[in-house]
Image (cartoon, rainbow, N blue to C red; front, side, top):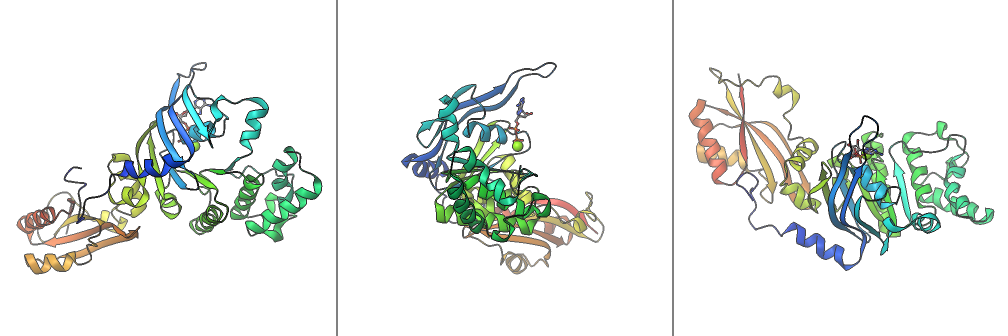
Length: 374
Ligand SMILES: Nc1ncnc2c1ncn2[C@@H]1O[C@H](COP(=O)(O)OP(=O)(O)O)[C@@H](O)[C@H]1O
Ligand SMILES: [Mg+2]
């Protein structure tokens, strides 16, 4: 750990990798073994190495977030889990079976135990809610009577029993995703893959859908793999997180550990976005890079860990006799740890600013000067 990421935490953190491995090795639901996927060159398009040497396991019954930027390889990973794509090298094992080696009827049977939900819901517009949910059951050859009973059960489960006869065009985004979830769970899968399933929804609906997924995980024990480009989604739902960047796993571990001690720059960027470490617009518009005659130095302090930083302003004032202004603060609690940042205004010229930075560093807070305000 370098000086900038070792923050105000009294005790050493547990090694993140070891914790995941312990939990997953017992009986992983999904295991990737030296998995690589390269899409071959096509016409004028060069070959794309979408996934490179992916090696990790997803524990049975867990909710695991897989986060990465657009193009990182997330959807490719999803299609490899449900056997829609074959690896270029390596293997994908789902529930003890090498799905990457199956084809035909065997593959179709295995796919019944892997449900999937999508960003744009992928409902058939010509079918009612009930008939959309019935589709995988029809394909699996269920009787009409069994389908009727199961569909009613599923509509109840996702809390839209009254929408039985509605068409997708008559439903909100959240209701459509509930139908998507019911359809994905119809054949009682062990795994639910969610590929950006809340990306088209507003924050309030997103929260409701994530709550529903949490209930499903708890009550049915379904392993959920949550693919997203939003750290806020991972944080609301997942216990484990895997960060992928340019086709590689760059970081993974417990959500609380990753949030408090992100190591990879990509993770740090995601966290900054999710936690509002970004400078508020009103402040950013006033920031200048040259000292102002009578103004303040602007310093951002990261708060990560058990030291809340909530007494920091008072400590600075007391111990340095500096009249510190709190320009912005955003601190969340994640897994019992405090995570966020404070933006401080330090009056009194360069000497006071340098003194403050030295004090913060000495007390193991990561701090940086953002500029000056008049
Ligand atoms: N079927 C495909 N054929 C060729 N290239 C693809 C195909 N699917 C994805 N890719 C490429 O693979 C990379 C990873 O894509 P994808 O898995 O969709 O990432 P993500 O879901 O994280 O945005 C991208 O460069 C994308 O253009
Ligand atoms: Mg994608």
